[in-house]
Image (tube, rainbow, N blue to C red):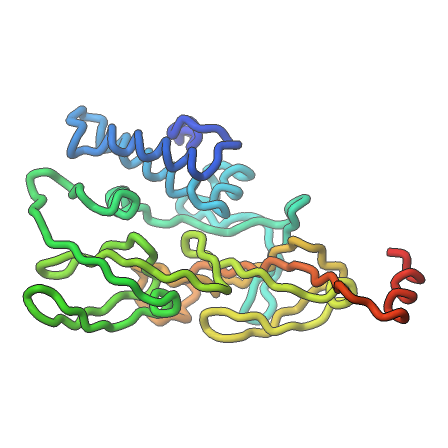
Length: 290
């Protein structure tokens, strides 16, 4: 831990840098230090360091965790901080736009720097110049839910039809290597789910009365609707974490429901403000004066 360099220092950016600025800095440094292009003895370690920093700072949730706790959550055995006791199948962590309560337990993920590089640049470099050979690459577009759960497709290639299996968890830019060709994935966006790394975010509107008094609502996940408890006094912008209801880790084995192989889902609460009130509704709100 003591030997870890600051991720912002590694990429030459500041905490206030935008995602585009982080990507721009990564692009420049990754190309400069890729072992296929840079023959300095320290190039390989430098390349890994750059990719490790980018893997955290390019993910908004991990970036927030790093800004608050530093390297600790990403060290072996690091389990994150804060949070609330598990309730049923979920662990709830709340925070609002104005201030955070709890944290994001990401833990330690294996980072393959060459895979990050290839997904960012769309291929073109291998793991070593001597072992790399030219391969045909094709692109396929799949639906969001197929990317979440995996799918088997029949594709038409110049040398005939092939049946291919796309694993759960792939994202736009993912590159799958088959015997004699590579397949680059394009995932159609979903109107409900927004993906950030292996986490999913949805916007959930609720009426003012429910936010004030609390209650239960149904929210969508990639496994189907689940019951979600809204705590009394929930504020607009609050995020509620549904543990292990996010994207399957693409390299993980085991069933889709395995908690160890899934990201999380976050439900962002938004209030429905009525545009038309009856006279009685207006009177009641005026009486409340809140």
